[in-house]
Length: 424
Image (cartoon, rainbow, N blue to C red):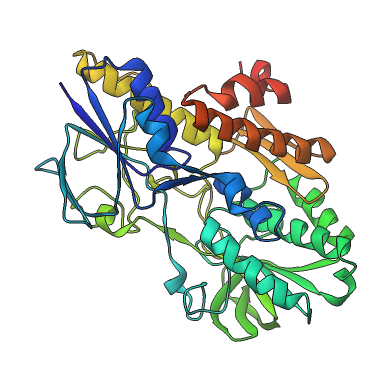
């Protein structure tokens, strides 16, 4: 009997647990360990920040969901990993031995890389977690009584740009509905070399389309922005030229700010010798296995993927839902193969698919593969994307409640976008 332990219970960890339970004989034990006792549907956090959703709408208690599937659950952060000894130490003092470890923790939010940033003692907000989104909503309610300038964007080294674009449009839409948009100048400040880069070198016509949407929504922007510090009511950033040299200094005033941070690997993972790159992301082979420890697998934001291209200000490559889905499935099948004495053959894919809400419309893009040149390079916008994202939210939460690992992107999203046949 093998014991498979999954660190993290998010968009990667929960489907990994369900798929492993589906394909492995019941003699094998599965345990999920999470720092919190709830699942959160992270893509909905921008809606939480303007009260278009409430916490109860996008969170689920994990324990009863896993218990119904015969999966064990422990709600406690991992404080240390003894990779040679196949043992975890938890913050509650408990130790857990494993035969296979699956790391799906998501990232450490590296607010400390920019002095004055972050919601914990800093001057900027985030929509990376439901707690952070709720903190924005609390300040937003006060802001509405005395509105003023807003800054939205992404710090140097950020890799997940989609939520920043979403939030800029969602906030603009919410302010229009409240008849307050004319009182709120919005500036988008990003490390991307141009609007619509997305950490992907652009997708299709994303540059011109997103620039057009920013103009239509009266959103100003600063690109190649190397934000250096944040003070109360003021963000300091250096705009770089194409070679990365300082070009122009900006002091951007704000009454409310939401800046996505750079990501790193979480501390106990980053501390394992030879497991990670210098930023703490897990180094994996083509089968999602650690290059050093063959019984450790990883998927999602916490894996090491090189940037799509060099940019004047550092940007990372995003890990989108479709990519995570294929990584998780590859892990489940490769663990099953190893238990059966067979070689690993399953591989994840570095394809990017995204449905981005824009308030009352939306944008969808498909990059197959993620790194150019691509077989499919597609970017479209329309109200249908907004409706599709709402439907996807409901579907994914339903999938988590029912305990199924059905591959939603492969089965539904790609077909709905008419892309599957093009990839083949």
